[in-house]
Length: 256
Image 1 (cartoon, rainbow, N blue to C red):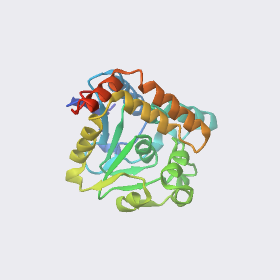
Image 2 (image 1 turned 90 degrees about the vertical axis):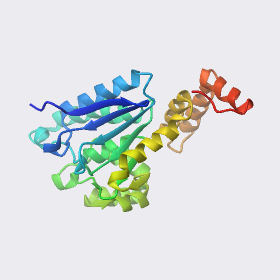
Image 3 (image 1 turned 135 degrees about the horizontal axis):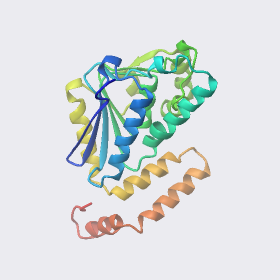
């Protein structure tokens, strides 16, 4: 029984989560998925937390995939329950979280690990990182949103190539494809994530929440535009709007 699955800390309004299953290359199992959900929920409720940074322990792996041993004996019904649970409590939960989540990708991000990073709102990668969705080599396909989020990030053709070959790509190619926002040296990874968090935290929390909702609704249809209008209008009833407009008119920085 592992004693530590994640390391948690709050520093300067940033909620830190570090995945710590080094012997398993931080592979996702149900226990880890549930614990990550609980910690993220705590941060969502904590008003002192403005941005969340998720990373892995060490420089070997962010998350090297799902823990294959856990589902190696599953049938279709058990597999369906597994992915429904994981998506509900972790992957979709992160994507819809009302506070920005930054994935600081410190090592291998494969399978469920890449899907976890894609569920986050931003991705910053170390230069040595390798990424991929190798599920087809195991006789399965991505089940934690990989077939949906990857095409949205890098386009259908590029996603087809990554998923159907199962090949890994390096950080520079991930940057060219738009899979990650930035690539930095390993020693600069966390400070770069902090710098991004600080830029985000200058802005109104309510606006950040509403922007995430509107962007998540973007699918090229009228539904996304309707959601943008709803979230735009909602901002006008907030204290953040009053402070932002007042600060602008008074030619000072807002205090959110």
